[in-house]
Length: 389
Ligand code: HEM
Image (cartoon, rainbow, N blue to C red; front, side, top):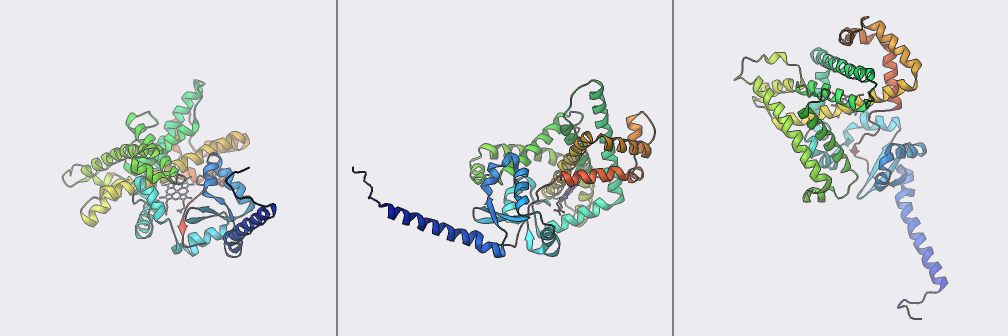
């Protein structure tokens, strides 16, 4: 029978099979075997992450059970993952200068995060890190942010207690997301976003910001995101639209505050604002006499991003843990009652929870810390760096 194919003897097929096997094992030795001496083992590719996207944390936990440090292959590069504290210390402390977030990261994050702390390296990162750690340690900002968190916690307590009285089910995580978003936004921009109270404009901004962050994350698993961005289709088109909504709102806040604080409006008491935006505007004004709107947008939006989901996630897991451990819940409730004022009013009670009162709540502190250990708000953290292989 003519098939158009040359006839192959079984011996030839076996020989060819063995040759392919030999080449594969040689390549495997180069990639994995040689690496075993110097590099952590390769346990998969980045495409496995796409496959396991819906159970990504479980997937990584499974891999970390086998290897404390490992590599995943990606087109043109290798990614190293570690759960080894000695390696983390090497990267974040002893050899920090060798590691950076890198150009590819900046490429992906830049459209939303601009030149903010999460996207940049080097001097820009250092400058923002210094400002952020200095500002957050000042008495004024700590008092201001403590007050903001306290007021929003009371607002949240009113909503929860109303729903409970009406036997109305509620999505606790969604409520916490709103409460932390409102708090961080006020600390950052000095404006109440009002998502807890259902403000349309604030909720539109918050939804656009959340969506945009998710679309940015998708870029890490979509090899063709640049093509989609170029063609302005799919997730990239949606991202562009969301960034527009975010920018319009943020620039409106910045312009309004800058105008209030400008020399032309002496009636406004510039010293009375303790939010980050006012502080940055004052700092830029005194340096150059000019306000760089874009840089301010980038710096402050990154801080909003850093603070809101981490805090809401930690609190959601904390409440979950309290439901699982009613005996711990009891102890915390008693500790809070002892630390605060005995009153049936939510607002009076929350006002009585001063920094001094909170500092006495050691059991609460331990329970929160343990929750963060078991359910870290940032289970994966990315950096790119001077290691090759
Ligand atoms: C439960 C709450 C939080 C957790 C678990 C958390 C965790 C983290 C982690 C693991 C990092 C990366 C490590 C590093 O770069 O040093 C980080 C970075 C950062 N966090 Fe938080 N965070 C929380 C809340 C906040 C809040 C409330 C703010 C500010 C309003 C904030 C601002 C930042 C900033 C600006 C960075 C970037 C630091 C840098 O790149 O140098 N975080 N956070």
